[in-house]
Length: 493
Image (cartoon, rainbow, N blue to C red; front, side):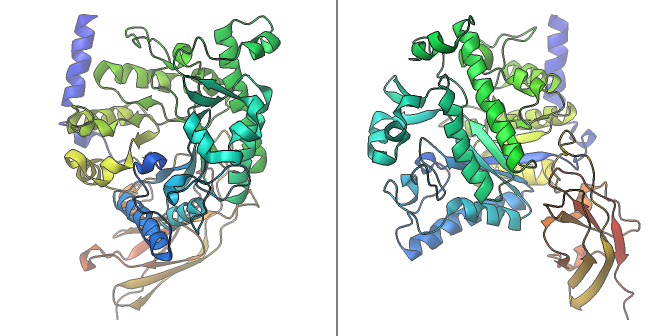
């Protein structure tokens, strides 16, 4: 056993040296959480005037531009915090971080803006929604009549001076689904990302005894609570798929499911501490992705990440990396810890990584963004496919042409591809190369993705990066990529 552990640790220590052995993957989730609560990541400016609205939007654009530059492809945009939201809702009030006052319209719809700007950059936008916690009593009082604690007090409980939705009440799942229905129906989001779908930590005195006596049907309290969370997720998953089956449903559970064979979770895990039966959710197929909050190092990370992957049921496992610990005021991590974790994710076939939080990418803490741009995210990556939902790729585009329109500018045009899903038109991936046929398996040849429409202007930043040969593929919202159409620039006159 001791020899095995020493060998394992030595291998992880050498991973940065072995970097060339790990090629850039073509399919990988590269996500970042944009945290709105308390304005931790965004916004810094209040939208109390036209100038404030402009600056607030520009702050978000700056974040998205930096992520795009670093070849991120997924934004987890905080959409619901503690009983308040960052979109125009008929159910809950606006979060005060936007204007400085509760329930005040900022003069634009932040979620609509975030979705539009993400899609312009070929990135997915997932609506990150806090599920169960509702904040302090003072917070609920500030929300006034619009607080769910006033509108539906029967589904709310007070515990440790905080309000929570009661997972044991049958109407809680309906309330959460009403919020999610608003988001999925009104916005072109790519995913619903559920946070805090859990009970408070080791909440033995959580005030749900009335519901337990009424609904337990012989189950012990812990199992009943796990079943409550499972039923909420099951209800939401089925509801989302009825509305828009391509919208991903994900959770960010506690980072360790429970103890693994060789390592203890040290008394804090999803299954026992907060009643999340996440591996049961994966086995039942009621989530498309999980982002376990693996904000740990060494043997508190690797065995537990591997455990998630081994029990994934073929769904996407994207470990959340605690990059905030690179800040000396938060922890004592060094950058090589993040390097080893990304190597591990790739070596063991996990679907990607998520970075908590985007601030530390933006601030280039300890050179984090530089490292991602120059070593790990040197080429774009497409989203991994979801064959459990749809495995039929669109057709190849037709009539692809390339024409120079000005020095350094090339217009690509094509006829639309078709897909088996008539509701959604596919988007397009553009490849460019110096050789024919264009190697569409090489992510370094990707110059753009998420292109809507049938035209693209190719304009490399530097003349020596200009390519003559092009390929275009269609990709559906389930990640299925079709065959390529190819063309070349006409010979120079």
